[in-house]
Length: 114
Length: 115
Image 1: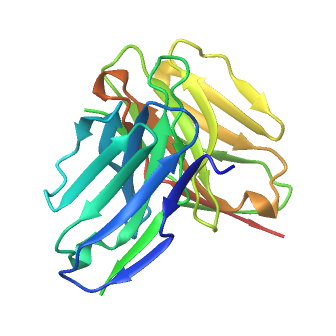
Image 2: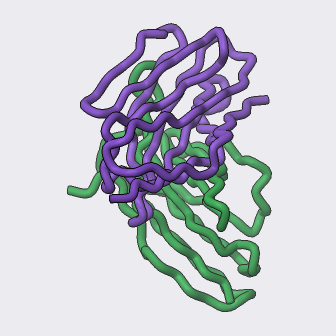
């Protein structure tokens, strides 16, 4: 009965590879997000989708491409991985109405690029 | 532009001590929301509290309490009688409804509670 789930939990890959991280939420929320947490624990928004439409894109390189097949899923595909992409990626979801829009986070995916 | 500052990068206390984690924010919006999240050593982000900018009442939940002072743009978090299980990184965050509800996080405060 996990609310926000991500797969895989750990991802180790070589520079230049392409990889995907999947996120699913069963909370019935209409908005999903991707955040990046760097090695110093700093958390920054990457993308946000509302009802499958992109609403936030925070100057992320176009090697990162989010895809939302439906409201319950927001996957993150990364092309040509670089060393600097190593981080923990968190997916989150919320219901985009004032008064109820707390973001709930998935367990995170630790990506290591060698 | 929005900004959240957690000036204390690391705090160490002995069990049963009270500890306050500071959070100062900057925003031009009149309506906004403030949050605290806990990140234990296991790595997940756990929601603790959400506060509306119009509601300056302090809140208490068990050993946790929050002090929201709009006049000083602060939203401080106090843990009373700290326990070892409170050891974690705590993040303060600001949400702007005009920017797709994105959260702007502070840099986090690592709390270490020693037995």
